[in-house]
Length: 333
Image (cartoon, rainbow, N blue to C red; front, side, top):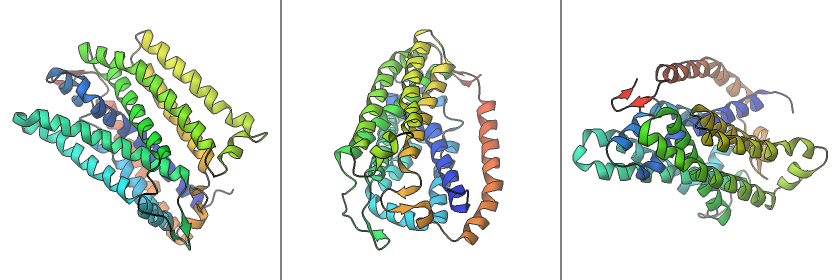
């Protein structure tokens, strides 16, 4: 497949989605794990670790969603129609979480309720994202370039499995982030939680992978036909190696390595997703070329993306660099 404008935009959106998953994933993970930390210093330290960057992380969600609408309007219309309930649940949960994040500091009298809202919002958002992924993988019914399924076609055992797996994965990202960024009891709690969460994520990856191979689409052929299997077999092999390396790093008291290795696990699962789906936007129904906007529109928008994406990367990198230290009782130091 040539590197035409539709493919370039598909890669840009894939990059934006991956950036959102890994960047917003760890602060959603902290929300999921929030009840495991004692009220007061423990929770304050956990939430302060992401306070400077959490809202900027969601820039990539806006870029991914807006890019899908602008570059692949047909796919956007089909996906939003098919997955309206989980998409709305995700957006409402993100709003709920954002309000709770800020209000817990400004309304101390009701902080336990805001903490609960922060946890619920984070968990629902993570679960909805996993359900959306599962619904895409299992396929969406399309006829005459329109959604042809029912209101609850997205709700299946497979989509619930992917939803639960994403929740566990985000929780692991949050735990390893706290191992890196915090000290004392907060770090110790996060370090204890990380190994079972890592085992849970590995089990989820195996379960989702095996279930995906059994779906109707040609996933089995994409992964097992010779000689492609010589390449695709490296994904599960590297996943096992990184999972073991992460466990060893936690056992040895490392701080940054477990987080980076967990990011590597997410990168491998994302690579597996691309192997399974690309060049389809909606499996069995729409490829990137079927759903793409006219080349004139794609080219015009690409000029803006070439300018904006480096700017976003620059200020994101600068923010992480400025707040590169550890979090104490009074914030970063």
